[in-house]
Image (cartoon, rainbow, N blue to C red; front, side, top):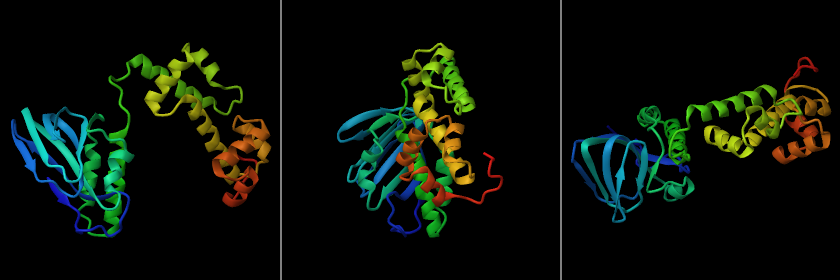
Length: 276
């Protein structure tokens, strides 16, 4: 399967412009040699094994591995004895040369199972001849690159680790409005060392537990400021941040506005002024 953008040059020069995408299946031992091109090509190995050579260095590629060819690099790929399936997409345009740096893509890095559904959506969007189709393609490519660059652990967490992280998240979700809640108390409840909770939670959810707690409180604070007419001091208490001065500083740091000014700029139509 091979699909090209229907315009030789993008309608809009975006940070991410997709030139083409495809899905190849190489037979056992089959070799693929292509001349250099003026574009970046990112691959995601789906099944089987193979080898690709970049800058005179050979890399053995397994399923779930992402790799790439930069501008003006010849393409040399060879399937292993069981064959090799992989998906790919190419980028051109004003920012394509910086993609590998901006997304911290290594020459061959483990990224997990290929997001085939996203690639299928991308294939459909590449058939759309409108400018909106190009925007959708770029958005899908952005998602793919984010998944490709996400940090991967050398081995999946065991069930106990996953249960501990989930239990911590559930407790934070249920009790974040309690001003007495803190990470030290949570680690005691779960019988975990603080460093262990930080490691397990961050690996599972991509954010540290103390940051997650802060984000939950900030989300509620901004909702209450924009959707109710509760006094700012009451909003602070309802968010688990009863120190009015500290609450105001947090809102200002996050939005650039004091709670009062944020409410003025983002207030919505209010119903019951005492409702949350």
